Length: 182
Image 1 (cartoon, rainbow, N blue to C red):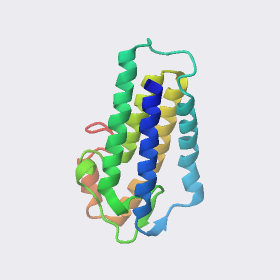
Image 2: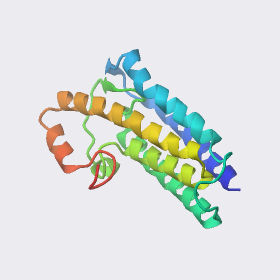
Image 3: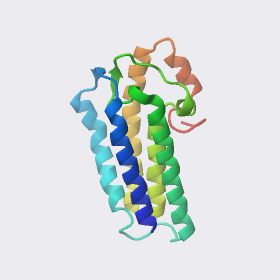
């Protein structure tokens, strides 16, 4: 039941994400394929590992309560990422871009963290790792974190160039991934 619930949450999120992606604005500037592969490759490996997580020996004591805590973290993480995706609207892109008519969004989930989609997905991966409990899930979380940190550094640089008057203050006020910490 736990595995089915988590899989259902992830499938629903993927369907939502695909539909929402159809409305993005046109790109004015986009990262190179080489740059994109630098964060897509570890992300793809993380997805494979998390999909296979739970097939090996447990790292934590097996507990139904812990498994349902993991499900709750998946739901909250995917919900937060989805809220961020809806809130950023047509400014969203799966790759690092500058959109035509770009706007710096600082409200909603973007007032909590600068990269709420990454924060939500990391929380969902952590929840999946907790619920499935094997080493593959935790390696997947670390790979995803590394991919997102690499990607957000590029995004931060481009946002600073695009919004030189606004972005430094936003960056000073709002954490990148974890409120008040990172």
